[in-house]
Amino acid sequence: MDISEQSHAAIASVLEEALKRYASAGEESVLTDIHLLPNQDSGELIILDDDENVLARTVIAEWVNYEGDDFYMEIEPLLRAEVTALKEQGLLDKLSLMKPYSFVLVDDEKETVADLLLMDDNETLFLNDELLKGLDEELDAFLKDLLEK
Image (cartoon, rainbow, N blue to C red; front, side, top):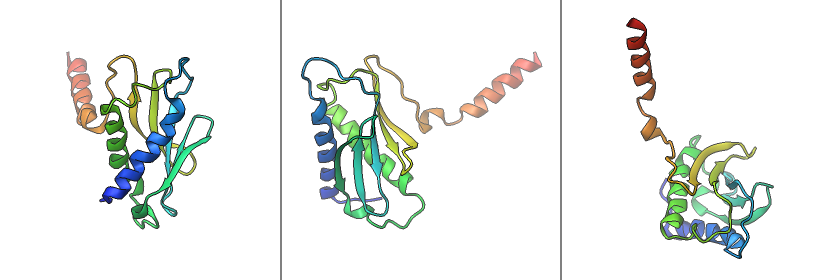
């Protein structure tokens, strides 16, 4: 899904607005996830904390009345890129959030659709589809080889 530069800016802005609540002020806040809740009908993107309190919201014009069945698959890379950009800019390093915490894409029932980014003190390897590609076949081959001996 292609979105305008204005929509990219709106997503970045709403994420930054939500994260301002956790700007370093001394003591770390206990939070395990920041939820990104997009709405396919209204085009709204709502950022929530663990207690489902709204941290920020905006409307993305290209999402309004999106007709496809693949809405979450289409927007996942967009949101992942925006969250990753915040990390690369160092904005996530200045937050008073206890690590680890995650940025999570959720659906209307607040069920996890995808983990977008995991922030941890350690260099945690975040599993994604590209990394796991072919793992089942490799494990099956290993088990078959093991059982034949």
